Length: 113
Image (cartoon, rainbow, N blue to C red):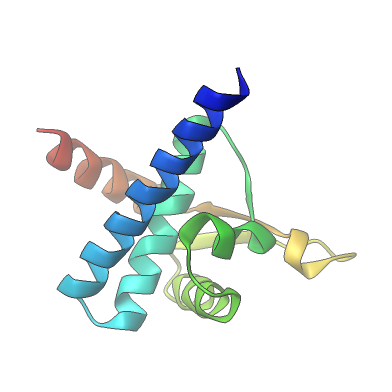
């Protein structure tokens, strides 16, 4: 059972890297980073999983400073909500705002069509 799961994880990681590279080619780096982070959060919410600040760089294949800068930009623009954890700031959960989630859903549907 371990083999197929690892294979699937490898394929998901490869797909995420390809998606990240495609986004970076199409946009400037800081904008691309925010798009990557927003899409990761959207995917996780769609799966029913919470996302913490600590996980963002691992899930997006960005460096931790890149991921945190991107999430700070999204927060500044009012596109995400950060539920702060007073004991451990990196354990703070991040969710998309309703408007951003709706926009991400529209983009996702357009890509699927």
